[in-house]
Image (cartoon, rainbow, N blue to C red; front, side, top):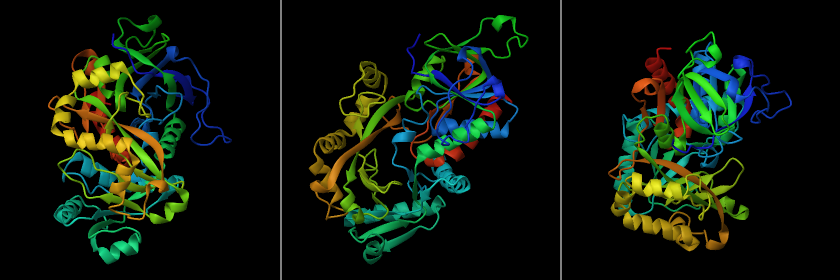
Length: 458
């Protein structure tokens, strides 16, 4: 038996499946009520493993399209959307970076429009503050122009190339030779969006079980308690307390644990997940005037990650970063967080060693910047020379679930698969939903529901 991720059971929902409660008028929309039946008595037509933004968007989309189905979401934490969803920069991406015709490009462009529309409908605050992708060196200009052409191919709205004088109009303290103005880029609190998805799901009759630690996924060997349904719910999902949830079909959106959940269900564990921590710095409040919107570097295809950038937040703060360093724990948000199992899996089972050799100097530089603020500030000064070490504070961190193949290649696009055999034919794994998954979540959820309908003949 493969040791599992933590997925335990507090219940919140209404009627379907016998779960009482729901959101009271006095509750904030993102607070889950407590109570309900024990998980050991629960059965669903479809169970979604993972209560992040992709899992919740998918649960919402599925129940809105198939209101007669009983659907449950299992989440390992006591609250929803606390890991990748709750630790990202909050940017609503426009879709400029991604290879034309790729799923990333299509879903990001579609998803950003859907997120803006959804937030407007629900009264969720957002800011369409725009973004400048700035070339600060002459050698970056050809790459910037190529990126601009890529954005046009992807159908990104409102793009234009601007010169130094227009850069100053947009960002008075930013220096640059040329920039792409992306007015459609915005910011939002994605955890608030995800919790709104959860509320929609529950109001439509869905059930959410938190604190549910999945220890095993197996096919039932006999009918439960001589039930009239017989083998209607043949899959058993069991937690460490011995509680069980039974279902007909499973969709996994497990993020940092997507490979382990796949392996747990008897499906292919590849691609493996390698966790990369991104540390942010914060601009001191008295220096926030230096940044108005998002300011990004020109990406360099020689390196696996984008590079540090300037990101305004909904609370008015300005985040600077992130870097990209190997995390020694899948949910290791602090530099010294460590899990022996996680690091051994990373070294032995993934293509990390090959990735390190391919990007050795880049990795060393990222580690150096993580240790010494002055190194990060030096990079930031290329864009805003007025920033000094005394203007910044260490901020939060996020951990990115990066899928990696055996040859050390980062898997940049979305990966969906199932398996073979009794369980494999009843399960869909969302194996890789990399950034911009939050931006794309509503578009991704539509694609997942289409795939669920096709695979499971709903």
